[in-house]
Image (cartoon, rainbow, N blue to C red; front, side, top):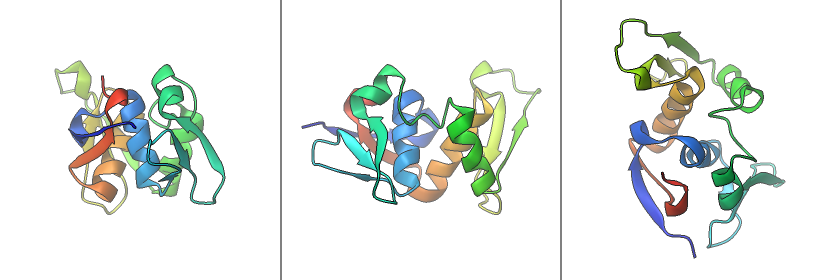
Length: 132
């Protein structure tokens, strides 16, 4: 059984962030061991804990083919923040009318963090093995 741990949304990256986005979008787990998530339409998503950790499957925080449509769906916007010195926070993004904007090294990461924060809160539980 996979253990869940709490992580601040502002610290989410990679597979853990992708997992949280799936949860925020209404995907559900198919079992207690959190190995696979099921899309809201009932079709298995191509996202397993191990698959996401290895870089394939559902990756909205790094794949424009998956993250881009989410930006459109939520009428979001992202902005490059040239005045920020920290390379980990070059972009800010957020869904329209949410009042929440998050930062990230890329526009997709910033948007995905903001989506998770809006839907799930400041702290989320993700499978321990996905956290780096």
